[in-house]
Length: 56
Image 1 (cartoon, rainbow, N blue to C red):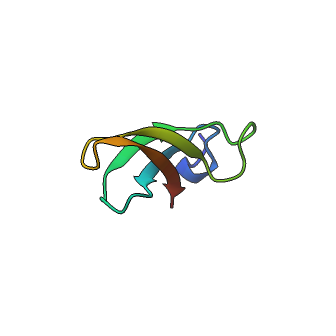
Image 2: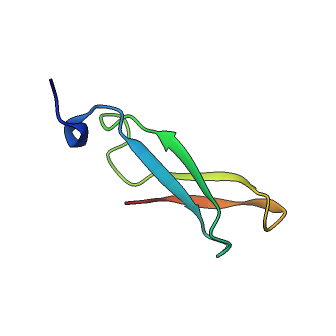
């Protein structure tokens, strides 16, 4: 059985760049996206769509 750190689809946290501290939790495929993940998603604290970046 593989270690959690060696999984193909690890769980990652996406933190808001608006400085609100809001986070989303998702999975990503390491083969397709080896770099840090960035997405534009809705931040309910800020009340608008902002960029979320992967934190480790």
